[in-house]
Amino acid sequence: QVHLVESGGGLVQAGRSLNLSCAASGNIEKIGPMGWYSQAPGKQREWVASIGPNGKTYFPESVKGQFTISRDNDRNTVYLQKTILTPEDAAVYYCYANIFSGGRWDDYYGQGTQVTVSS
Image (tube, rainbow, N blue to C red; front, side):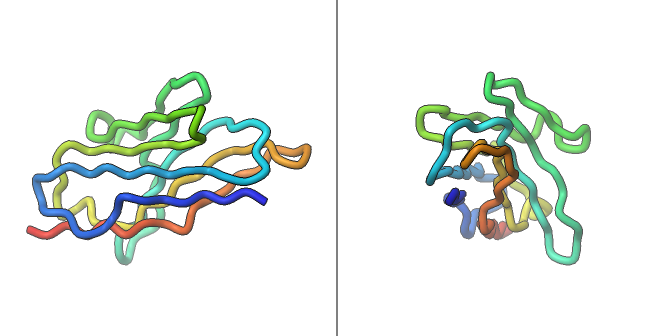
């Protein structure tokens, strides 16, 4: 089995930084792309960022320049950072990873971490 567990959410003051991490564990042979989605209250889940195994990053145009994504392949961990939070960043953030386990590639998702932004 494979598990993804996010951490770093909670109550953050507007203007402060966001630092999330997501660690994959279990029967992992290889990890392909990893990334993050967010889902704000009453809205659909939106793609925030992705990063390939070689470190190449991808962002939707709507958030390009706002977030930083990185990964530590030795720790099977992906990170998401934003320097200055605004109330609009309040959402549940989900990580995902494309993982080769048990002879096949599958997409795995974390349970999500709530980020609440206080003004």
